[in-house]
Image 1 (spheres, helix red, strand yellow):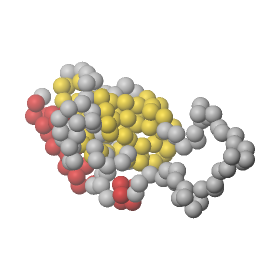
Image 2 (cartoon, rainbow, N blue to C red; image 1 turned 90 degrees about the vertical axis):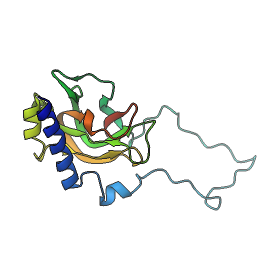
Image 3 (cartoon, rainbow, N blue to C red; image 1 turned 90 degrees about the horizontal axis):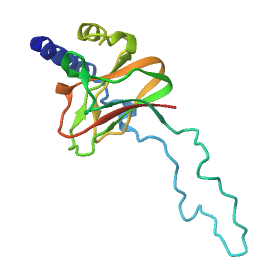
Length: 180
């Protein structure tokens, strides 16, 4: 069993390293779009005689807001019978998606190598290993120092999988799959 888990870990690291998942590309080097702050020259002057403009309520929904639909934490229990495999609860992800790593005590190169795959495949380590290179499986390298990793559009029930041996760094971490 121990040899199998070591082999699974080595295979995942090799596959992720060879495919360069999560590294390079415009998405990894471009900051996400955000609201621009106007400069002093662009900001209109307000005088006492100018009536105040109506403001939106703070509870107004934002169209570009991300919603967390799936989460896996370092403190979650292991897959039954396999101490090295952390497996999230199945979740439905529809729409544009991204993975976010929260690792409060992380150093510059600390991170996690999560896999996102359809929940129906996450039955045992052999099936997981057999589906690592499938087009519906998403292999990602998440570094604590980098922005969220875009995943494209999803439309299925998924799970997040992390091997404890693929975590670089110490301390608590959380991987969240968010959609909008």
